[in-house]
Image 1 (cartoon, protein in one colour):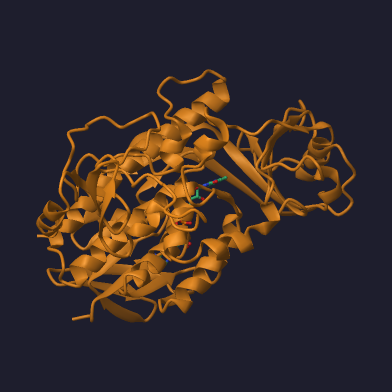
Image 2: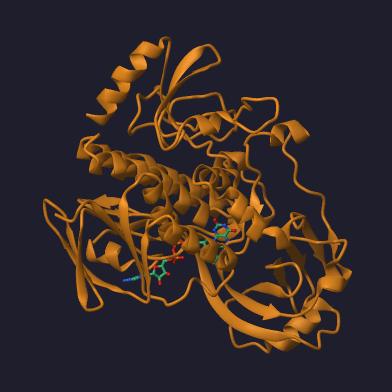
Length: 458
Ligand SMILES: Cc1cc2nc3c(=O)[nH]c(=O)nc-3n(C[C@H](O)[C@H](O)[C@H](O)COP(=O)(O)OP(=O)(O)OC[C@H]3O[C@@H](n4cnc5c(N)ncnc54)[C@H](O)[C@@H]3O)c2cc1C
């Protein structure tokens, strides 16, 4: 036997967070990543309330915010013909204003993926994960007792394999798991990652994303550190344009120090794996779902996957739960992945056409964990349709709504559970909270809760 080890393949945001979640639950974990470094691309930059709540549970929220300090105050959108002419747009506010924003103990966070990944990698090592960059998984076989994984020159036997190996997941392919969904959404795009000192140009009108509509250089400019690192995103997928000239036009200011770091062609897609689990192998992150980036949900959804899977693997490995608990990972996270991917594709359509889609959910449903699991490791309340409004009420299958527990606003209802289960009173009822802060049962007496928990784990 392996001594209850889980092997994670892939050291991106999903894999690194999986390692942290598993260590939080005291599971022995090895992570292998074929690259020698974390992502050189800034890609994801917006991390939602729910992700920050997960980092809070892992004791990492403050560390992430410290690393994110460059982009503090860069929440606005901006627009103009060129950067020189662009102005900030007002911040989006939910109906209800400030009060409606108080949905979480943790505000969302802007931090570039290439800044966040090293923070998570270091934290995973410090938490005791065996993190091996520069190590590739070449194959695996599973049997009734475990998974034998073939790495560079060695084999590791593990109880479970977590496939966090990205959109082109070799593990998913080896398992013969197909994907469903719309496929390509919209035109191909190009991301031009460049350096130029624009700190003085943007001061006082800082932005997260600036939409530029110059006829010869249309695109969107994303702040990576708000000063020197930028990504210009253009549609059309043509990678071999004269990018220095295009950028000079789009910026509309002299940029003597302009340096292009990389030009990346990519295509937004909406695809969800047809199964998230096959025996002892579980797909997470982009291996399980890809979606257009307009709702900033790809990485956030992957992080929610591993938060869901982590406590279940730990409970089964410790012998506290029967292995069938792991079936609930697919039952819960596949509909959630489908919902996030569909919403992201709708957002992409709306962005392109300018026509509002009545099927678009309230943004907080994705951002603040408002999606409801209707089947899985819970006692369903009869709901069947995905919710599109955001009305946190402590329904079964949703994360417990945030309420401050003290006047100093240091402790939230979210802090009641994780890594343990909890029973708590809420609006006159009793809630059984799972380690991922999801309501597993709602009822009239605390005494029933323990029996429900035992039943869910049996
Ligand atoms: C332009 C853009 C903007 C985006 N913005 C956002 C945003 O604001 N918010 C958001 O949430 N998401 C955003 N995303 C999506 C986000 O970047 C991805 O969802 C996320 O990076 C996926 O993480 P992952 O860990 O699942 O996969 P990946 O980051 O792809 O990591 C997979 C890793 O597995 C490794 N690997 C693969 N095969 C093997 C093997 N056999 N052995 C060892 N290692 C292997 C790879 O080298 C890779 O490092 C954006 C994406 C793009 C393109």
